[in-house]
Amino acid sequence: MKRILIVEDDMVSRKFLAKFLSRYGDCDMVVDGLEAIDAYLLASQDGQPYDLICLDVMIPKIDGIQVLKTIRDLERQQGIPENEACKIIMTTVLGETPVVQSAFDYNCNAYASKPLDMKKLTAVLGKIGFI
Image (cartoon, rainbow, N blue to C red; front, side):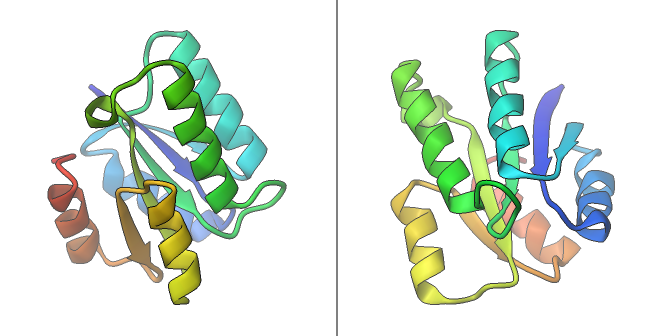
């Protein structure tokens, strides 16, 4: 069973993602950047790393771009090859090109605009090789 981490401070978006993604794996949910990094580290230490992280850009404590950068740095430190790295989809209402570009600079796999749409999200999951 695949493991999925949903990082989303908005309850409606969090519940929508959990309901939608639960067909593809076990979903854990956190509401801020610090919890996201803790969850990632715990999963790695338990030998059950996440296969997919849906990461909101605008979250409390540490923003999603910084969480993305931290996770990618941790993967490099752990010697995880790029092809085995966790798939990370950034989600946000922000469509500004600099935000999108910085997410890709830090190796996110895809970008999904809110409000999230099931058809688009399914297409994104297929495109990045998750389903």
